Length: 416
Image 1 (cartoon, rainbow, N blue to C red):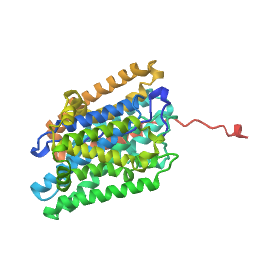
Image 2 (image 1 turned 90 degrees about the vertical axis):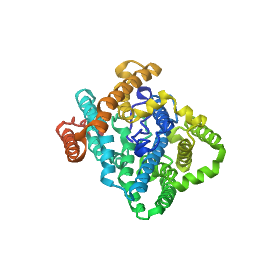
Image 3 (image 1 turned 180 degrees about the horizontal axis):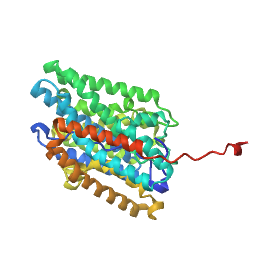
Image 4 (image 1 turned 90 degrees about the horizontal axis):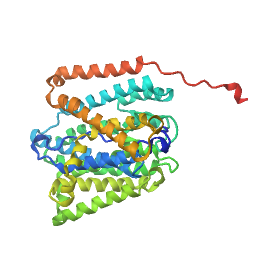
């Protein structure tokens, strides 16, 4: 990623995003409250990381990637079992209704606010990054710019955190097509999906180890190809063969296994420190993702273990339910409510930015996300397609219509 404010200004550079997942319980399956709690833990870890209080909180992205892979794959495999196929149009329609209303609202509001009141550098990066966010390619845009993700000095970027939303969107585009091909194998669909997920995870790990630069691991941290294993390990755990292996392996010790996995994840969050922890990019992230996938599988199979009950704590679940909008809003709030603008620092600033971001997330969920997702008839079918196209055109016009400040002039005579 490109540089972000110094640590004294806004905490560590933006790390993971907490993207949306398929809702547990879709299709008649019992809702798993522990998985909502895991999402809540992930977003709280990210918030603590971005406000300078938890060095490894950025690893919440791996937990959430694994959750996304698990839930999406579970949903699609149940569709295959019920219908023998996967409806790509229906799946992508559900994803658009789930993701786009909150994202479009945040993009438009933050862009206008930054253009009206932000410093010139921030305005320029916001207008430059916006179209790539809209295309779900912002991670590759930042990689192409050689934007150092772990460099904490330089111009502020309010959309920098959306790189992982792009990774998830790219996964949502490709993975259902893989499931559709696997569905043609009939009863062997689960086996083929499990095999593809495991083999592709291994390939992704090998690529990360081969490509990583010890000086700056930004490329492998934000690249879709080198981060795919986090999603794919979660996907593998959702398959019937993996569930059977897991059940045989832990037997009556599911509670102990869940506790060990949770302890390992917690220890990693406490010990990791981003670019300074090279071990993360030579197998550590893979191990953390595997532990996350294991914990997800155990919570799904044994929801009455002590760990699963703790994760089902109602306040933690609530943060999980608003985690998507909370992630969308939290980094722009941190950047805009910097110590220089508020005169605050430490925990008072953390309380302010978390309170504002949480309030905006709640408004987004209850006034925008849920009404459009569950109750707006116009958001479905042909009218929904028209609304989506109108929103995309509106964003494109916004990026093009708002004038960007001219870059600072360089006095070449002073170089002589």
